[in-house]
Length: 258
Image (tube, rainbow, N blue to C red; front, side):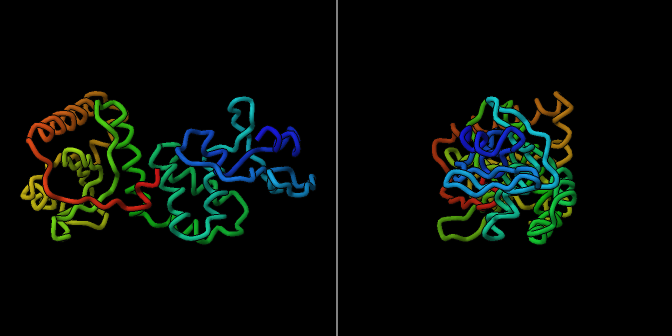
């Protein structure tokens, strides 16, 4: 990347997968390096760099003395160039799930930038149910950072040994058969009042938390503590049951892209 910046000049900014990785996203950057450069600068693509002229160069964020585009800009740049809808949604899911930016920041960045290739991105951002679920998982993931638990899988479908659907889990600890269901309204799914019953009947340990609690935990240590204690206690109880329930969990590719 240093060679790419040296080639493009000090006013260039690294974007795309390399920028997202620099901000802490767990992905493998693709090469060549994508660089944003002023419209006044004409550079030929090289094997290791693809310069993209922009009338709206972002203020760079420096990591190890290299200039990277902010998360929202880098994510939108990647999404615009995504080969299909699944890849597009994956990058949006990753940055939201990791709490690197908000849906509003992504929408604002899309509105402010070049509209070429923006239609599919805009459609994804308008999917309020999808964005709400991804953002809620991002907040839930922040809560789990304070929990003495292994990392879960996110948004899974749980089936029995006959592959009959038993239910869904926002977060799933497969090693003990623990499901965390975050109850919310306005999203597709089973009734919050009953959707846990087939899971518990199959021996799955289920912790249910309201979306209001999860969203409020960021600024309320007491609420966060209650959630963490409930999950830790349930994990320990499930581990002591003497056997994992005979169920299978299938991950949703978009929600687990992170």
